Length: 402
Image 1 (cartoon, rainbow, N blue to C red):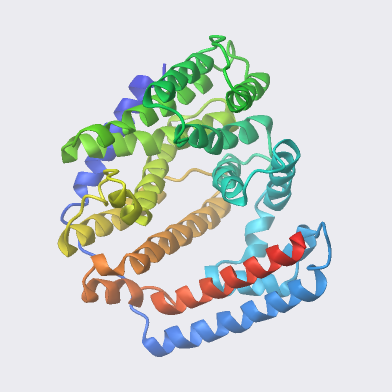
Image 2 (image 1 turned 45 degrees about the horizontal axis):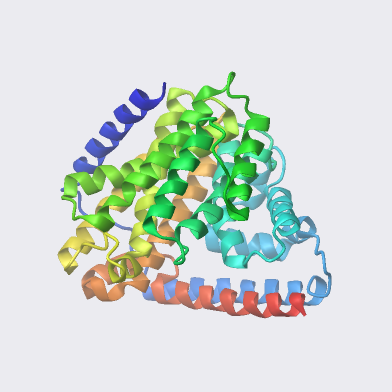
Protein backbone atom coordinates (compact mmCIF):
# COMPACT_ATOMS: atom_id res chain seq x y z
CA UNK A 1 0.00 0.00 0.00
CA UNK A 2 1.37 3.40 -0.94
CA UNK A 3 -1.22 5.50 0.92
CA UNK A 4 0.81 5.72 4.14
CA UNK A 5 3.98 6.41 2.17
CA UNK A 6 2.17 9.15 0.27
CA UNK A 7 0.71 10.75 3.41
CA UNK A 8 4.12 10.78 5.12
CA UNK A 9 5.75 12.45 2.12
CA UNK A 10 3.00 15.07 1.88
CA UNK A 11 3.40 15.85 5.60
CA UNK A 12 7.16 16.29 5.09
CA UNK A 13 6.58 18.49 2.03
CA UNK A 14 4.17 20.70 3.96
CA UNK A 15 6.83 21.12 6.65
CA UNK A 16 9.35 22.06 3.94
CA UNK A 17 6.88 24.67 2.70
CA UNK A 18 6.47 26.09 6.20
CA UNK A 19 10.27 26.26 6.49
CA UNK A 20 10.33 28.70 3.55
CA UNK A 21 8.07 31.21 5.36
CA UNK A 22 10.80 33.60 6.48
CA UNK A 23 13.31 33.14 3.65
CA UNK A 24 14.08 36.24 1.63
CA UNK A 25 14.53 36.48 -2.12
CA UNK A 26 18.20 36.63 -3.07
CA UNK A 27 19.14 36.50 -6.73
CA UNK A 28 22.28 37.09 -8.72
CA UNK A 29 22.05 40.50 -10.41
CA UNK A 30 22.93 41.04 -14.06
CA UNK A 31 23.55 44.56 -15.29
CA UNK A 32 21.20 45.95 -17.92
CA UNK A 33 24.10 46.15 -20.37
CA UNK A 34 24.90 42.47 -19.78
CA UNK A 35 21.24 41.57 -20.29
CA UNK A 36 21.06 43.56 -23.51
CA UNK A 37 24.21 41.94 -24.91
CA UNK A 38 22.98 38.47 -23.98
CA UNK A 39 19.60 39.18 -25.58
CA UNK A 40 21.25 40.34 -28.82
CA UNK A 41 23.45 37.22 -28.94
CA UNK A 42 20.47 34.90 -28.41
CA UNK A 43 18.34 36.83 -30.90
CA UNK A 44 21.07 36.57 -33.54
CA UNK A 45 21.40 32.84 -32.90
CA UNK A 46 17.62 32.40 -32.95
CA UNK A 47 17.38 34.16 -36.33
CA UNK A 48 20.03 31.77 -37.74
CA UNK A 49 18.01 28.76 -36.54
CA UNK A 50 14.81 30.19 -38.03
CA UNK A 51 16.56 30.68 -41.38
CA UNK A 52 18.02 27.17 -41.20
CA UNK A 53 14.61 25.59 -40.58
CA UNK A 54 12.87 27.73 -43.20
CA UNK A 55 15.42 26.87 -45.92
CA UNK A 56 16.05 23.20 -45.14
CA UNK A 57 13.04 21.76 -43.31
CA UNK A 58 9.92 23.79 -44.08
CA UNK A 59 9.12 22.11 -47.40
CA UNK A 60 9.50 18.61 -45.97
CA UNK A 61 6.12 17.07 -44.95
CA UNK A 62 7.97 14.80 -42.49
CA UNK A 63 11.05 16.75 -41.38
CA UNK A 64 13.89 14.78 -39.82
CA UNK A 65 13.97 16.31 -36.34
CA UNK A 66 16.96 14.22 -35.31
CA UNK A 67 18.97 15.81 -38.13
CA UNK A 68 17.73 19.23 -37.01
CA UNK A 69 18.76 18.48 -33.43
CA UNK A 70 22.33 17.83 -34.62
CA UNK A 71 22.62 21.19 -36.41
CA UNK A 72 25.40 23.30 -34.81
CA UNK A 73 23.24 26.47 -35.01
CA UNK A 74 20.56 24.86 -32.84
CA UNK A 75 23.12 23.55 -30.37
CA UNK A 76 24.57 27.05 -30.06
CA UNK A 77 21.11 28.51 -29.39
CA UNK A 78 20.40 25.96 -26.65
CA UNK A 79 23.79 26.63 -25.09
CA UNK A 80 23.22 30.39 -25.06
CA UNK A 81 19.59 30.44 -23.92
CA UNK A 82 19.52 27.48 -21.53
CA UNK A 83 23.14 27.78 -20.38
CA UNK A 84 23.86 24.09 -20.83
CA UNK A 85 25.96 21.91 -23.13
CA UNK A 86 23.50 19.85 -25.23
CA UNK A 87 26.25 17.52 -26.48
CA UNK A 88 27.39 16.62 -22.97
CA UNK A 89 23.77 16.12 -21.89
CA UNK A 90 22.90 13.84 -24.81
CA UNK A 91 26.03 11.75 -24.30
CA UNK A 92 24.79 10.87 -20.81
CA UNK A 93 21.42 9.59 -22.10
CA UNK A 94 20.14 6.33 -23.53
CA UNK A 95 17.72 6.67 -26.42
CA UNK A 96 16.30 9.85 -27.91
CA UNK A 97 13.58 12.20 -26.64
CA UNK A 98 12.89 13.63 -30.12
CA UNK A 99 11.92 10.19 -31.41
CA UNK A 100 9.69 9.63 -28.37
CA UNK A 101 7.97 12.97 -29.09
CA UNK A 102 7.48 12.12 -32.78
CA UNK A 103 6.11 8.67 -31.89
CA UNK A 104 3.60 10.18 -29.50
CA UNK A 105 2.30 12.77 -31.98
CA UNK A 106 2.03 10.08 -34.69
CA UNK A 107 -0.01 7.79 -32.42
CA UNK A 108 -2.36 10.59 -31.42
CA UNK A 109 -2.89 11.73 -35.01
CA UNK A 110 -3.51 8.15 -36.13
CA UNK A 111 -6.18 7.46 -33.50
CA UNK A 112 -7.68 10.97 -33.20
CA UNK A 113 -6.92 12.80 -36.48
CA UNK A 114 -9.20 15.73 -35.53
CA UNK A 115 -7.77 16.31 -32.05
CA UNK A 116 -6.83 20.01 -31.59
CA UNK A 117 -3.16 20.88 -31.22
CA UNK A 118 -3.82 22.41 -27.79
CA UNK A 119 -4.99 19.05 -26.44
CA UNK A 120 -2.06 17.21 -28.00
CA UNK A 121 0.37 19.65 -26.39
CA UNK A 122 -1.40 19.25 -23.03
CA UNK A 123 -0.76 15.52 -23.21
CA UNK A 124 2.75 15.98 -24.61
CA UNK A 125 3.79 17.99 -21.54
CA UNK A 126 3.14 14.89 -19.45
CA UNK A 127 5.07 12.71 -21.91
CA UNK A 128 8.08 14.97 -21.41
CA UNK A 129 7.82 14.63 -17.63
CA UNK A 130 7.81 10.85 -18.03
CA UNK A 131 10.78 11.07 -20.40
CA UNK A 132 12.63 13.04 -17.70
CA UNK A 133 11.84 10.24 -15.25
CA UNK A 134 13.26 7.71 -17.73
CA UNK A 135 16.42 9.84 -17.79
CA UNK A 136 16.60 9.89 -13.98
CA UNK A 137 16.14 6.13 -13.84
CA UNK A 138 18.90 5.58 -16.41
CA UNK A 139 16.44 3.86 -18.74
CA UNK A 140 16.30 4.03 -22.50
CA UNK A 141 14.17 6.94 -23.65
CA UNK A 142 11.22 5.60 -25.60
CA UNK A 143 7.45 5.98 -25.78
CA UNK A 144 5.71 3.07 -24.04
CA UNK A 145 2.03 2.12 -24.12
CA UNK A 146 1.66 3.18 -20.49
CA UNK A 147 3.24 6.58 -21.18
CA UNK A 148 0.96 7.14 -24.17
CA UNK A 149 -2.17 6.01 -22.33
CA UNK A 150 -1.65 7.93 -19.10
CA UNK A 151 -0.72 11.14 -20.93
CA UNK A 152 -3.85 10.89 -23.10
CA UNK A 153 -6.07 10.49 -20.03
CA UNK A 154 -5.48 14.20 -19.33
CA UNK A 155 -7.19 15.71 -22.39
CA UNK A 156 -9.72 12.87 -22.68
CA UNK A 157 -11.03 13.20 -19.11
CA UNK A 158 -10.70 17.01 -19.01
CA UNK A 159 -12.83 17.38 -22.13
CA UNK A 160 -15.53 15.18 -20.70
CA UNK A 161 -15.59 16.97 -17.34
CA UNK A 162 -15.55 20.38 -19.10
CA UNK A 163 -18.50 19.47 -21.34
CA UNK A 164 -21.19 22.10 -20.68
CA UNK A 165 -23.86 19.72 -22.00
CA UNK A 166 -23.28 17.29 -19.14
CA UNK A 167 -24.95 17.86 -15.78
CA UNK A 168 -23.05 17.73 -12.50
CA UNK A 169 -24.78 14.43 -11.76
CA UNK A 170 -23.61 12.95 -15.08
CA UNK A 171 -20.05 14.10 -14.45
CA UNK A 172 -20.18 12.61 -10.95
CA UNK A 173 -21.43 9.31 -12.35
CA UNK A 174 -18.57 9.30 -14.87
CA UNK A 175 -16.03 9.89 -12.08
CA UNK A 176 -17.48 6.89 -10.25
CA UNK A 177 -17.19 4.73 -13.39
CA UNK A 178 -13.62 5.93 -13.94
CA UNK A 179 -12.76 4.96 -10.37
CA UNK A 180 -14.24 1.53 -11.04
CA UNK A 181 -12.17 1.05 -14.20
CA UNK A 182 -9.01 2.02 -12.32
CA UNK A 183 -9.86 -0.60 -9.70
CA UNK A 184 -10.34 -3.22 -12.40
CA UNK A 185 -14.14 -3.25 -12.16
CA UNK A 186 -15.75 -3.57 -15.63
CA UNK A 187 -18.17 -0.66 -15.29
CA UNK A 188 -20.44 0.11 -18.26
CA UNK A 189 -19.06 2.44 -20.96
CA UNK A 190 -21.71 4.94 -22.10
CA UNK A 191 -20.14 7.08 -24.84
CA UNK A 192 -17.42 7.01 -27.50
CA UNK A 193 -15.25 9.31 -25.39
CA UNK A 194 -15.65 7.01 -22.39
CA UNK A 195 -14.65 4.10 -24.62
CA UNK A 196 -11.45 5.95 -25.53
CA UNK A 197 -10.70 6.47 -21.83
CA UNK A 198 -11.39 2.84 -21.02
CA UNK A 199 -9.07 1.74 -23.86
CA UNK A 200 -6.27 3.85 -22.37
CA UNK A 201 -6.65 2.01 -19.07
CA UNK A 202 -6.57 -1.30 -20.94
CA UNK A 203 -3.29 -0.24 -22.59
CA UNK A 204 -1.80 0.32 -19.13
CA UNK A 205 -3.08 -3.09 -18.03
CA UNK A 206 -1.37 -4.63 -21.06
CA UNK A 207 2.00 -3.32 -19.90
CA UNK A 208 1.59 -3.64 -16.13
CA UNK A 209 -0.30 -6.70 -14.91
CA UNK A 210 -2.40 -5.85 -11.87
CA UNK A 211 -1.18 -8.90 -9.96
CA UNK A 212 2.51 -7.98 -10.40
CA UNK A 213 2.29 -4.19 -10.18
CA UNK A 214 -0.50 -3.32 -7.74
CA UNK A 215 1.14 0.00 -6.79
CA UNK A 216 0.77 1.24 -10.38
CA UNK A 217 -3.01 1.15 -9.94
CA UNK A 218 -2.87 2.50 -6.41
CA UNK A 219 -0.99 5.50 -7.81
CA UNK A 220 -3.66 5.99 -10.50
CA UNK A 221 -6.34 5.93 -7.82
CA UNK A 222 -4.36 8.49 -5.81
CA UNK A 223 -4.44 11.01 -8.66
CA UNK A 224 -8.10 10.22 -9.33
CA UNK A 225 -9.06 10.81 -5.70
CA UNK A 226 -6.92 13.96 -5.50
CA UNK A 227 -8.60 15.37 -8.61
CA UNK A 228 -12.07 14.63 -7.22
CA UNK A 229 -11.09 16.24 -3.92
CA UNK A 230 -9.66 19.28 -5.72
CA UNK A 231 -13.14 20.05 -7.05
CA UNK A 232 -14.30 20.90 -3.53
CA UNK A 233 -12.91 24.48 -3.57
CA UNK A 234 -15.46 25.25 -6.27
CA UNK A 235 -18.26 24.37 -3.86
CA UNK A 236 -17.17 25.94 -0.57
CA UNK A 237 -14.26 28.09 0.66
CA UNK A 238 -11.34 26.27 2.24
CA UNK A 239 -8.93 27.60 4.80
CA UNK A 240 -5.23 27.90 3.92
CA UNK A 241 -4.29 24.61 5.61
CA UNK A 242 -6.91 22.65 3.66
CA UNK A 243 -6.02 24.40 0.41
CA UNK A 244 -2.31 23.68 0.88
CA UNK A 245 -2.86 19.96 1.45
CA UNK A 246 -5.24 19.59 -1.50
CA UNK A 247 -2.79 21.43 -3.77
CA UNK A 248 0.15 19.31 -2.62
CA UNK A 249 -1.77 16.04 -2.93
CA UNK A 250 -3.01 16.84 -6.43
CA UNK A 251 0.42 17.83 -7.76
CA UNK A 252 2.33 15.04 -6.05
CA UNK A 253 -0.07 12.25 -6.97
CA UNK A 254 0.10 13.11 -10.68
CA UNK A 255 3.90 12.88 -10.95
CA UNK A 256 4.09 9.86 -8.62
CA UNK A 257 1.75 8.11 -11.07
CA UNK A 258 4.12 9.19 -13.87
CA UNK A 259 6.94 7.50 -11.98
CA UNK A 260 5.08 4.23 -11.43
CA UNK A 261 3.98 4.10 -15.08
CA UNK A 262 7.62 4.48 -16.14
CA UNK A 263 9.31 2.26 -13.57
CA UNK A 264 6.62 -0.09 -12.21
CA UNK A 265 7.98 0.40 -8.68
CA UNK A 266 9.58 3.36 -6.91
CA UNK A 267 12.45 3.48 -4.44
CA UNK A 268 12.05 5.76 -1.43
CA UNK A 269 14.49 8.20 -3.05
CA UNK A 270 12.46 8.36 -6.27
CA UNK A 271 9.14 8.56 -4.39
CA UNK A 272 10.38 11.53 -2.34
CA UNK A 273 11.70 13.51 -5.30
CA UNK A 274 8.64 12.88 -7.48
CA UNK A 275 6.40 13.98 -4.62
CA UNK A 276 8.26 17.28 -4.34
CA UNK A 277 8.61 17.83 -8.09
CA UNK A 278 4.90 17.22 -8.63
CA UNK A 279 4.11 19.83 -5.99
CA UNK A 280 6.46 22.33 -7.63
CA UNK A 281 4.82 21.81 -11.03
CA UNK A 282 1.34 22.20 -9.53
CA UNK A 283 2.28 25.43 -7.75
CA UNK A 284 3.90 26.77 -10.93
CA UNK A 285 0.73 25.95 -12.90
CA UNK A 286 -1.39 27.71 -10.27
CA UNK A 287 0.93 30.72 -10.44
CA UNK A 288 0.57 30.86 -14.23
CA UNK A 289 -3.22 30.41 -14.18
CA UNK A 290 -4.03 32.69 -11.25
CA UNK A 291 -6.03 35.24 -13.29
CA UNK A 292 -8.09 32.63 -15.14
CA UNK A 293 -8.70 30.73 -11.90
CA UNK A 294 -9.85 33.89 -10.11
CA UNK A 295 -12.21 34.74 -13.00
CA UNK A 296 -14.04 31.39 -12.73
CA UNK A 297 -13.82 31.38 -8.90
CA UNK A 298 -11.44 28.42 -8.88
CA UNK A 299 -9.59 28.76 -5.60
CA UNK A 300 -5.86 28.13 -5.45
CA UNK A 301 -3.18 29.57 -3.21
CA UNK A 302 -2.31 32.12 -5.90
CA UNK A 303 -5.79 33.01 -7.16
CA UNK A 304 -6.76 33.90 -3.58
CA UNK A 305 -3.81 36.28 -3.07
CA UNK A 306 -5.31 39.76 -2.91
CA UNK A 307 -2.33 42.09 -2.62
CA UNK A 308 1.32 42.60 -3.61
CA UNK A 309 2.63 41.29 -0.30
CA UNK A 310 0.74 37.99 -0.50
CA UNK A 311 1.67 37.35 -4.15
CA UNK A 312 5.32 38.12 -3.51
CA UNK A 313 5.50 35.97 -0.38
CA UNK A 314 3.95 32.97 -2.17
CA UNK A 315 6.21 33.38 -5.21
CA UNK A 316 9.34 33.71 -3.08
CA UNK A 317 8.37 30.57 -1.17
CA UNK A 318 7.82 28.71 -4.44
CA UNK A 319 11.29 29.72 -5.65
CA UNK A 320 12.92 28.44 -2.45
CA UNK A 321 10.75 25.30 -2.34
CA UNK A 322 11.69 24.52 -5.96
CA UNK A 323 15.40 24.74 -5.18
CA UNK A 324 14.97 22.52 -2.11
CA UNK A 325 13.10 19.95 -4.22
CA UNK A 326 15.79 19.77 -6.91
CA UNK A 327 18.40 18.89 -4.29
CA UNK A 328 16.51 15.58 -3.90
CA UNK A 329 16.78 14.61 -7.59
CA UNK A 330 17.91 11.05 -8.29
CA UNK A 331 20.03 9.77 -11.20
CA UNK A 332 22.31 6.78 -11.91
CA UNK A 333 25.49 8.92 -11.96
CA UNK A 334 26.68 12.36 -10.93
CA UNK A 335 27.20 13.64 -14.48
CA UNK A 336 23.60 12.95 -15.47
CA UNK A 337 22.36 14.27 -12.12
CA UNK A 338 24.18 17.56 -12.79
CA UNK A 339 22.72 17.94 -16.28
CA UNK A 340 19.18 17.06 -15.20
CA UNK A 341 19.31 19.43 -12.24
CA UNK A 342 20.50 22.22 -14.52
CA UNK A 343 17.76 21.52 -17.08
CA UNK A 344 14.92 21.33 -14.54
CA UNK A 345 16.23 24.35 -12.62
CA UNK A 346 16.39 26.47 -15.78
CA UNK A 347 12.95 25.28 -16.94
CA UNK A 348 11.38 26.14 -13.58
CA UNK A 349 13.14 29.51 -13.54
CA UNK A 350 11.60 30.30 -16.93
CA UNK A 351 8.14 29.11 -15.84
CA UNK A 352 8.12 31.27 -12.72
CA UNK A 353 9.64 34.29 -14.47
CA UNK A 354 7.14 34.06 -17.33
CA UNK A 355 4.26 33.94 -14.86
CA UNK A 356 5.57 36.99 -12.98
CA UNK A 357 5.86 38.92 -16.24
CA UNK A 358 2.34 37.88 -17.30
CA UNK A 359 0.85 38.90 -13.94
CA UNK A 360 3.17 41.84 -13.28
CA UNK A 361 0.24 43.97 -12.10
CA UNK A 362 0.02 41.76 -9.00
CA UNK A 363 3.64 42.48 -8.01
CA UNK A 364 5.34 45.64 -6.83
CA UNK A 365 7.75 47.32 -9.25
CA UNK A 366 10.61 46.56 -6.83
CA UNK A 367 9.86 42.82 -6.78
CA UNK A 368 9.52 42.75 -10.56
CA UNK A 369 12.92 44.42 -10.95
CA UNK A 370 14.56 41.95 -8.55
CA UNK A 371 13.19 38.98 -10.52
CA UNK A 372 14.14 40.58 -13.83
CA UNK A 373 17.69 41.35 -12.70
CA UNK A 374 18.24 37.66 -11.91
CA UNK A 375 17.49 36.57 -15.49
CA UNK A 376 20.39 36.78 -17.97
CA UNK A 377 18.16 38.45 -20.54
CA UNK A 378 15.82 40.24 -18.15
CA UNK A 379 12.07 39.63 -18.23
CA UNK A 380 11.17 41.96 -21.09
CA UNK A 381 13.95 40.75 -23.40
CA UNK A 382 13.04 37.17 -22.55
CA UNK A 383 9.43 37.91 -23.54
CA UNK A 384 10.61 39.39 -26.85
CA UNK A 385 12.52 36.20 -27.64
CA UNK A 386 9.47 34.09 -26.81
CA UNK A 387 7.32 36.31 -29.04
CA UNK A 388 9.68 35.72 -31.97
CA UNK A 389 9.37 31.96 -31.36
CA UNK A 390 5.55 32.08 -31.10
CA UNK A 391 5.11 34.12 -34.28
CA UNK A 392 7.53 31.99 -36.26
CA UNK A 393 6.04 28.72 -35.00
CA UNK A 394 2.55 29.87 -36.00
CA UNK A 395 3.89 30.78 -39.46
CA UNK A 396 5.54 27.37 -39.86
CA UNK A 397 2.41 25.55 -38.71
CA UNK A 398 0.36 27.42 -41.32
CA UNK A 399 2.88 26.58 -44.06
CA UNK A 400 3.07 22.90 -43.12
CA UNK A 401 -0.73 22.53 -43.03
CA UNK A 402 -1.05 24.24 -46.41
